[in-house]
Image (cartoon, rainbow, N blue to C red; front, side, top):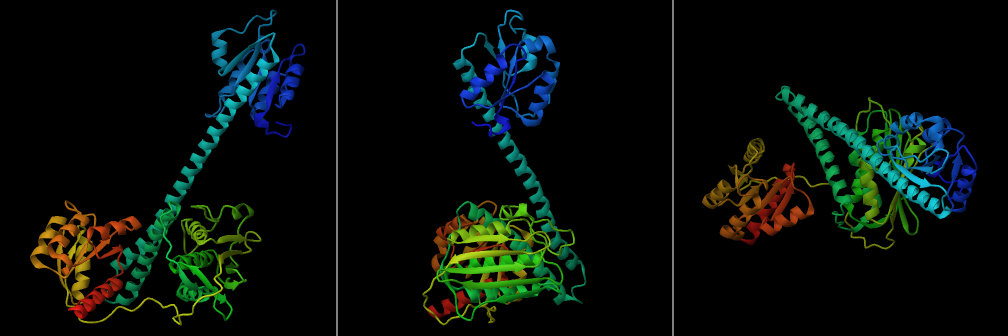
Length: 516
């Protein structure tokens, strides 16, 4: 250790008589330990509270001259993690030994060093005290990390409550209005807010999957320019009046080998983040470019910018830039964490720059470029429209949540299906064996026999004559695998896209008719 070592690892020495202080400092210096000689007990107490110390080395005569009250009071003010070691030079004939149990108890963490003292003994005691003190510093760091985690958790829960209450409030109010008069308008409101809630849940689950290493990429050749154009087109309706969102890209295609769903998440999160933090009359420019071996996405905005201290923290989980209460959209501080992790899974990198608060920011994503790709001639397509044809399937819904069960039954009945329902696993099995529906829509978390048990039982009795669809809130990859292993044909996570479900049923019916 040198003189530039942290003051928290220095030794404070107080030996006001003889040459003890000078000799102690010299011996510690020879061992590479930093020390500071104090002139009095108040001086030692002041330095310890202002600068910290690895240990206190005090001659016993200090207690005879100055008493112990000042030292005891200082030690009582230590933080909960701190128990500073105190090495007392004792055994001087003129003062007698420090052996008063009450005195030693009042001082606390005491090591007695009897004079005359061998240098190696003193240095050994000092090093032991330093090791013990460093363990205390480690405990302090762990405690501070725990306290920071608790603060971040509380902040996250507050943000989560805010983010969930906003769409729930809009849905609640829309339901109380006269929907017969404004049916289309308020259905659109509820659809948008439901999509917002779904995105919040999906982002939370995706962060959990990424951080636990459970995301599996499904990579293919992707035209980075076309993908980004599609994302921008879908986000344009969310841009507030006065705010402009534009894109710059070359006419040529820029190919990357990537999971298109995950790269769309990256683009959407970055652009949505820019929209969120850019005020009226601001500009957002999305640029796609490439070098010989790298493809770049740059999202530049004229928004609130970042303080210097935020540059290194902005990708941390639950971290948010400072905003104002009048922001039209909130956030939970997980989008940029998800961006960083998804880009990393593609062997890419993401960074951010900002001139400062109020001066905007620019996020840059770099991904490996695939310079040669086979042009299939197929452009990226938007989601298909639901198929419209007269359904012929008899559908059994097995769901223990009454509201979900009845609403899904009403929707499918309205669209022409013959629908029956059951509220638990056993009644679902009984109904399926009695009525022999073509399709079973089954919740997994059923009372009694769960959805997996139902699927195995029905499959063993009806074989391939029934189409089993799992409708569940369990959406991890292992949940999908378990569903297929139990006999389900398809695994869908809630909330289910009704149009997508109808397309699935229509395709199943068409396939059955073709093979019949």
